[in-house]
Length: 188
Image (tube, rainbow, N blue to C red; front, side):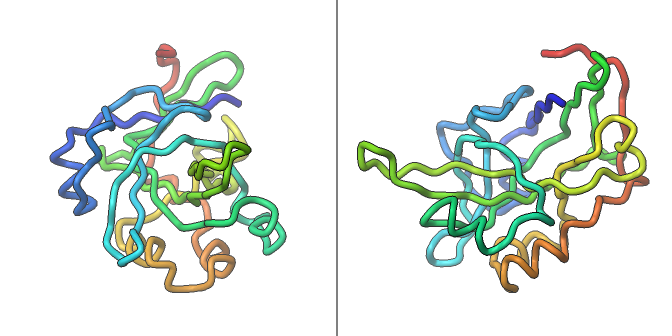
């Protein structure tokens, strides 16, 4: 399966929704892929929301993450959100675009990792969390991003519960009646 994420909202709307100042090195893009830069929202050390650009490293099934996963990945881990307008999935050589029916943003749950490179530099990237696909998306692929409802954003960013408990809580497939799929879009 191939995934591409889209974020084309104007800066002002993102600033309003998340209450952050977007970084100057961010530009809306309609084709964010794994290995490329994406916008994230997370809390800084003082607990204030901040937006930054980080490389999308890959994805992990939220229900298979355990304590060993954290020990084997990075020295620094925090919860974050990847805001997107939608995403594209390729199934049987046909591209489909998945969006919210009301046009609102999708708030993808993710984990921001920090590690030290061989040269000694501190690097950060994000792991997008996935879960089982809902009934709308299951015919295309068996996984989908873990999507948060607007009311869950603060709880996820603050890490109010232990992360493994939180992952079990949020890993349910997002309600299919709130989403839509457009078939046969062109790949960009």
